[in-house]
Every structure is written in structure tokens, then in C-alpha cells.
Image (cartoon, rainbow, N blue to C red; front, side, top):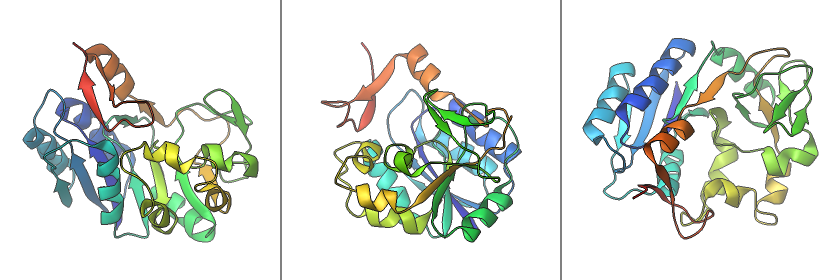
Length: 239
């Protein structure tokens, strides 16, 4: 069994598009761990109903106060499986993903922290944010050592080794953006560089995932709320 961790807000229609794509394109024995923060135009019952429509095993957390960072930590601490698939409620999977092959590679490579799905097409190399060229190792695109600290962990849909994330989760501050904390020089630098990271994609292949959350937030005028971009904890609607 593989746990799926999902941070969700009150956008049941968007979440249905996301979860339906996962069920259509990824085969496996899954348990869904979902945190439904009370922020957004919908209601928590509708979001949980979507989860239970597509997944037979669901553990839903419905906090009274919305906090994205706390939500992530809550889910990571709830994971039981050796590897888990992290996918927020606003990503769509576009093509079939061989989860069994991903798991086999993760077990063959005990130094591999995660394999994430790509949002860009690949050629001889694949790119991140149209900037960094990531080389192909024969099975997947593997980050060079010098990029591990900056690009290693990502909130994009990823298969993650629980052993990698748990020690950091114990030390992360829920008042700050967790991903930015992980990449802060000096805090986890040596730890991050000790692991390897991959992008699960072949050469000359299309993008595997699509960001459907950013267009939704732009069209519906929602934004990250907090005193700074590093201290955001929830979403808010523009006046």
C-alpha cells in the first residue's frame, strides 16, 4: 500500500479534476490522506465526498483553522508507508505513470529521496523552470550534485521516501514556507546534499503534469496570505 498525501482547500470541482486524473493514469494500492483547510468558495463535505468517490481508503483531516504549512506537516506525520505520493489538490496528471516501476527504482537506489513528475517536456536533457539542464541517467533525469540543495525537494507531485522527509519534518517551523526552509543555506544543506533526486521521465517525452491551481487562483482572485512571501500560511480572496 502507498499513502497519498493531499493538501486541499474548498474547491471540489478543481479537486475532482485532479483526483480523477490520478485514478485514470496511476495504478496502485492506495490510501488517501487528505487535509481539507476551511478556505475557499466550496464546503468541506463536498471535497471529502470527491475523495471517497475515487478512493476506497480515505483518512480526512478537517481542521477548524486553515494553515497550509501545518497541513503538510500533519499529513507527513500521518504517513505509514515506506514511500508516499504527494499530490496537492490542484495538479492534473496528463499521461500514464508507471508507479510500480518508480517504486522498483526507489528500492534499487536507497540514496534516492524522491522521484517527481515533470511539468515540462524533455529532450536530450530536461529543464526546470526553463533554466537548469538536468541529464538523463538511463532510467530518469537525475539532478547533478550542485543542484540538490536548490532543486532537490519540490511540492510538485512526487513519490517520496518517508525516511528522507521525517527528520526534516521534526525541525520545520510551521510559521514559514516549509519548502523554502528546506532550501535555506545552513539549515538542511548537508542533509539535502547527502541524498539524490530524480525526475521521472524518458528523453523526448511530453509533460506528465499540469498546474491547474495557478490559473484558478488568478481567475478567481485568490492569493497567498501572510506578512511576507516566506511566512504565508493560507489563501485569501482579493477585495
